[in-house]
Length: 282
Image (cartoon, rainbow, N blue to C red; front, side, top):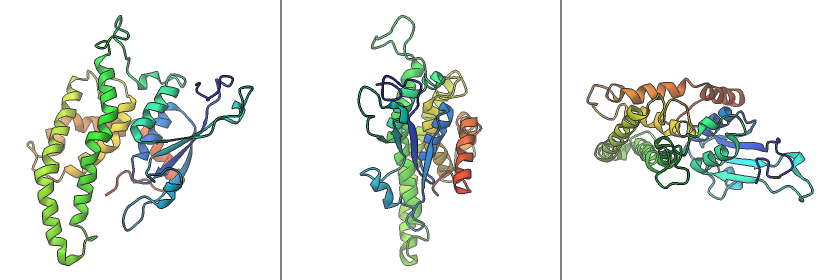
């Protein structure tokens, strides 16, 4: 299957629509699309002001009603002798969306470096022949959502347990329980994550997580990393006085990600569409 879903329209690009939910991982999808220089349409969704949940309208797009979602429709010129154009694709799950978009468009758009070189020279197809950068890249595409993000979600829920969202008579109790869970479970686990990422940056040989070039793994990792650092900064008496001082490479890395032109472009697109930009759910 070609980039345009037919053989005879190689240079055409599909129409891309992003179902974008505010303060969500959908922002990372916009950043990736900006890096790929792919035109896209936005359908903006707001969270419920009371519950912070996604609106039920997203259920019309995907059975789980979650964001991000990306819809791809064939270009109008793709119908040919092979028959009618295929139906639209609706992609869900951040990691899968990233893999799909980079696989189909990175090289075509002149952004092959968003995926590290896969094979060491002379070891193509060897079980042990993949480069360290590529193995790390593949791991991080799954790690960001499967291992790191769940702690961010748990931390957010625990934070709500001591907030004004809980009726006052029981708020001191729920807040105390949440604080104990955070200190005994969230903080120790987040320290392990921060230490691992600090180690990866130390050994990457560059300013990004797999080397000296920005990859899709950096972009996917950005949202949970920014959220983790913000939420955990005040949860612990850090060894060197602050989270940033304890994990200096991680702090420098986060700043480098926020200064990337593609990240800035994704923010500006949202400001243009909605009038404001808020990156994290607090």
